[in-house]
Length: 238
Image (cartoon, rainbow, N blue to C red; front, side, top):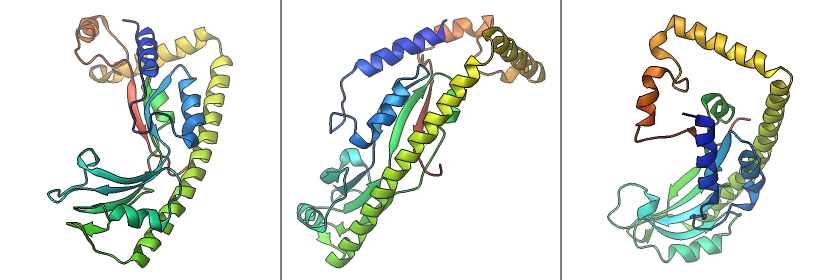
């Protein structure tokens, strides 16, 4: 089975589909990053969000925040103001929660070494309950304080997107230079030598991307045919 061809086919299919997000398009602050990834043969993005401030009404019977079961009272990918939040809160019937969510990228990678370039995670978020059963539980002064924090996080998130883009671009350029600096025969010989060495040390734990004659049929009949590795990115320390 040619996994590279399968990955290219899957990438073409995914990128040709309509954008099913609420906005219906890629967020402005992350367009260049998405284009950079999709322009490389070893990656493609499946969804993205540049970062947002949202106000969710969970409902009177909810005990956990689950956005698919919530009413979206307010959502913005830009800094917001107190008046917009106050107006939106008047529509709350249950437990309204103010959240800031940083950049999220879902990226499909051709193989593990490609995914390792993107392995970044963040805790740069905010989540605060404001109402309970429709009753406002905090003062307007506190809401104004929270909005300032959320807006600050939005600005910092934008800076992190720029830093992440620059770091990723540099890493990909460095990888390209490295790959073109050596003959393909030498790279193949090195890869084969490394795999043989690993296989001798632990033949039962050989990398799943290397297909042997024994497991080739098993892969072809696999119902979960996934010619790639999925990674979720939350930029933090870069």
